[in-house]
Length: 260
Ligand SMILES: NC(=O)CCC(=O)C(=O)O
Image (cartoon, rainbow, N blue to C red; front, side, top):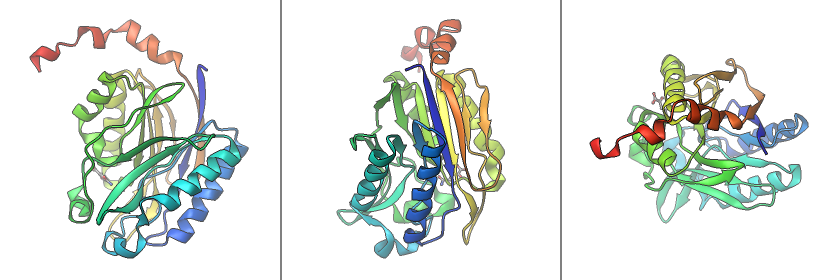
């Protein structure tokens, strides 16, 4: 398969209201299926938002509800779901965890956010993960979550291990959206990879979120950029662009890891 049709589910997450959010995700996945998507991508922490003070009652125990829910949707609609991330409770710790399920209900990836964002007090409540994830969606793919975007080493490590398609669920506040766009473009160009970022819209008690979910190709071209409204954006990507970028400028051949 050389093309993938991606649906970016840019939703307005209800703060601390998982029931509402599971319904919003179900509606978005149904809309993505109507739009003939192969893959649906969700935003960060979509079950609870950043309602970190109430994780004791709100977080999904072992992520099991989310895994069953996404797996049922993926099977029903015959698509892959890159499940953004949800707050999970695991062995007396909370994680910001991303689950990716395919149409046969296989769990392709389970990733706990590695870099926790102090400006939103994440490190006070959430335990950091320390393992990257790798799966195949026509090409080698990986998920990173929001603030991970500021760590080029993390992306380069995944790219060096084969990743050609990055997904980045986010809750990235409005004032720093220009940085979001610049960093997404940089990660795509330097790794000669597609970057698919899905941000939320709406407000929580601390922040305004302005969406601008987007898809950048391996040359750094922005193929899709949504506005600040809830919506399911659709774009088809041509995976042959990855080899084209890597043939034109062979960065992975020319790099000198012994120097850095
Ligand atoms: N949820 C997050 O990780 C936010 C990251 C962010 O806003 C940033 O500027 O970095």
